Length: 172
Image 1 (cartoon, rainbow, N blue to C red):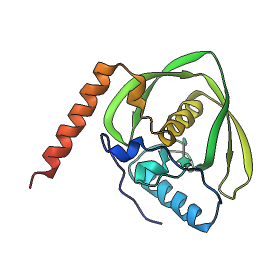
Image 2: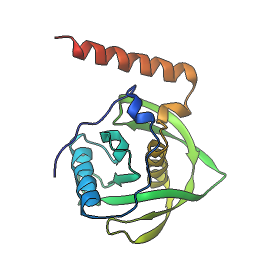
Image 3: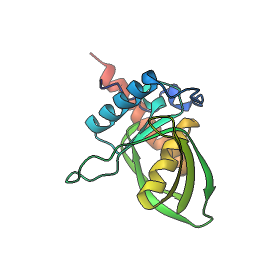
Image 4: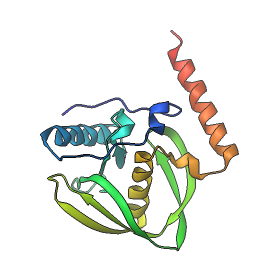
């Protein structure tokens, strides 16, 4: 396993729409293992392959607390097949938009179909943090960042600050 670099906004690669995975094989499992190690090291609770520059429809998540045993989850080709009309705001952050948090309105419940780590078809009924996180990560697969769900003014301010921080970091 290896820790990979996480792309940060406004990197244009984050806007790519990820390609469907044709086969869950050892190469994809190695990628997801690297993603999980990268996510833990960041630290975070979810990571999409595109966030490490790989435009494949793969996500890893672990919502366990620091005092709990790890509970990694793997989602290949995830797709929301049903979501509630009822929505709720939730404060979201993102490893690709470091140190910024904003409230995002999302459906309270969603049902997701996907392939697991071994390529077996699964269906997940999610609510609460799990629903928020899976919807957030699926957005990444479509080239959407959580800041796209907030006002244009707030989004532009955050992206401007990130761009400025990146330029300052590049100065020798």
